[in-house]
Amino acid sequence: MQNRVTEILGSEYPIIQGAMRRISLGELAAAVSRAGGFGIIGASGMEGNALRAEIRKARFLTDRPFGLNIPIYRPNALEALEIAVEEGIQTITTSAGDPGKIIGRVKEARMKVLHVVATVDMARKAEAAGVDAVIAMGAEGGGHVGRDEISTMVLLPQVVDAVRIPVVAAVGIGDGRGLVAAFALGAEGVQMGTRFLATRESPVPDGYKQALLAARDDATMIAARKGYPIRVLKNQAALAVRAMDERGASQLEINAFVDSLSDKGKGAEGEGLMSAGQVAGLIREIKTVEEVIRGMVTEAKSVVQKLGEKF
Amino acid sequence: MQNRVTEILGSEYPIIQGAMRRISLGELAAAVSRAGGFGIIGASGMEGNALRAEIRKARFLTDRPFGLNIPIYRPNALEALEIAVEEGIQTITTSAGDPGKIIGRVKEARMKVLHVVATVDMARKAEAAGVDAVIAMGAEGGGHVGRDEISTMVLLPQVVDAVRIPVVAAVGIGDGRGLVAAFALGAEGVQMGTRFLATRESPVPDGYKQALLAARDDATMIAARKGYPIRVLKNQAALAVRAMDERGASQLEINAFVDSLSDKGKGAEGEGLMSAGQVAGLIREIKTVEEVIRGMVTEAKSVVQKLGEKF
Image: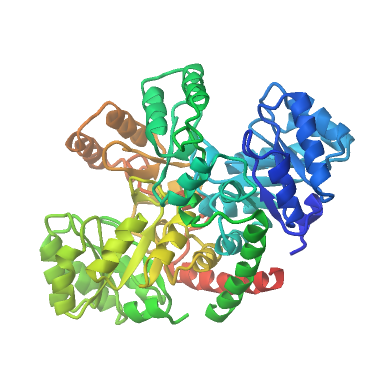
């Protein structure tokens, strides 16, 4: 499965682990890279020294390459980028902001960058800014989603038609069938978040993992459509956030409410605000990261073989 | 491409034309069936004699089988079913309601029925009721969409895992890539509405077709999320409906507003409420129905061949 995306990543498979705030740290990223994928440490909300420590932890756990995700609008974006350079990170992903702001430093440091986009327009702009690839993120994904709510099935081929750089499909992929579907639509790689949340190596509380296993197709919702849209598991906390958002509560007020839930340890009981993509409904087992990756590659080969008989 | 779905339909390809209220009439349905697909006359909002006339028109235009779509909750559902039986229709699709209400008569008449579902739960219930196949409809589709807004990419494999009867993928499919992606996810057929809207044979005004060509990935919106969710092209009319819906307007009030736009001929100018799926962004040319169908089958074969080299 070597292609333009594995060349950018330096990985065995073009399978990226999506950044998850305060979840995708050194241990999970290393596990994904060890299994042949490309692990990502999320820099969002990480203080400089803590971020450095996670990078070093991952490096201790694997000699394979892994990356950093940097949300560009965050105040610590440039600091995180310098840390990435100093720590010898070769490839980063960026999101939520204009990649033009970081591309100069990225090129100077001879790094590669994949930028997350949610529309065709964002993809065109990212290509023009000089990124090496785009990650097309559909509306069915967990965590922050694009305001236009364009699904992977339709976003992906349109982005592929609009740019010449490689396109990675993010969101909605949980097994070998999804991997093949993404490639049929023109992707040269996939990024998965929710599927890696529900692994042995994922650091989230057991209540969160159990909630993912219990989740069905209709188990998620977008909690703050007017404010900063975020897809989470549908529970009391999520419904409370939606109600706050609908009555026009500020982002600060919503954040304070969400933090108060975390303080009460509601996450551990599966009662906090838990990001998850609609693909959660497809997850029936807590596997190891290696089982997830090898399993989907094996399944994909058999799916392609069957397609050959059908067409 | 003969499989369990073509067996149910009696068509050359497992490609169904989705029902579009007052649009998918005899002429469009016949064109699709002539080209090897399976045309559908939408019975929604059709008076008995008018429906009969459309069926006879289609029969005059093709000797290949075509079907009828019957929204079960509509007052004319049972009448439409009797007309289908009398006119010798072999296969119908049903939607928006409990298929248990019509299954007895369908079986008695030795007809086949495919039921449209938007969740795994609806698919399980439809299978238990005895339908021959389900059509899994994702949230990116045009016209009425499911309240849970589950996308094709994630809905499809979950429905496939949940039932033993064949699953047809509706929504989000506009070309050969989408056809292969749907089959990779486990579908045995596809249904397309928006792609057939933008054909020579489609009876919608030219303003509507031009609006579909101009549409980009972010050109659609769900206009009445609180009421009866419907995906349409984003324009002044759609924004007005959203505003009415958000301030709690009744469905009657919204319908009256939409009808007043039609009366003013706004549809012809591309200014009325125009149903369209997100896949509209993929449509760049008004083709004939035959060009659409043959083109996507040819493209699909080449996509599958390339997948074989990649995996």
